[in-house]
Image (cartoon, rainbow, N blue to C red; front, side, top):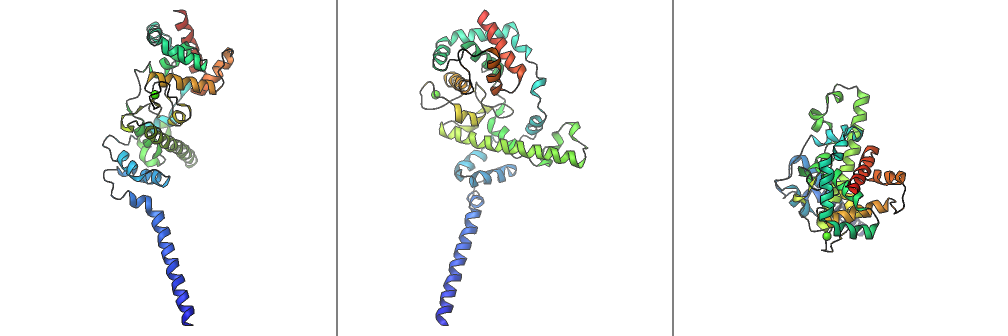
Length: 300
Ligand SMILES: [Ca+2]
């Protein structure tokens, strides 16, 4: 009987150790961030999720405790109400813009030619996309990609952004409210995934995430790639050991790599060109504008 009790006690002790170990492991992400000061409470749970997903806690602490990191409640309301079709693309056909695109092409002709030789995408199409996306690098976003993506990632909580939603989103019935909440949840999950890609992209390429500007929706660089595309299609064309989408060589080659992947071929008909460009931005007016700009640049 004594032996049985001893074995039972040992078994019990073993179970307790295993259970406490399991509890500690489950709590590990939270506890590993306990000593991290300066994370805005709005990003605390997000930071824990990132550590749970395998990111190093000291890296996450360094990223989110930086004073440059801030929550912007206006980003998600813009995302859910964004209407690409309503944008006015005609401004890109203005003579002054076409001339600037032409001058940009001339200045970087050697680079445009070597990228064209490698990927087969006409230089005029590439400069047209640069013009429409970032006005040839003049407009790369006013805030950090990190802030915009993190702000969207935590915006599934309706209360956080409610005040910034347009009036048409207010005073809605239960059913409509539930639909909006589902939409917010889907967008915030997407933003979280892009945020993870941004952290990986900056880390892999030795880039300071606190210096990476992004569009309101988190697209980065001259070619305005979402971070997941930066990881999939980014090219280190100038062979300096990193994919830097703010560098014209890497940005142009990455853009060409993307277009080639989605089916651009030297003899592709216009319909096919529009189809491929729509992978870049799912808007027919956008694709048609890119081709019109390319044609005008070619004619000058
Ligand atoms: Ca490079």
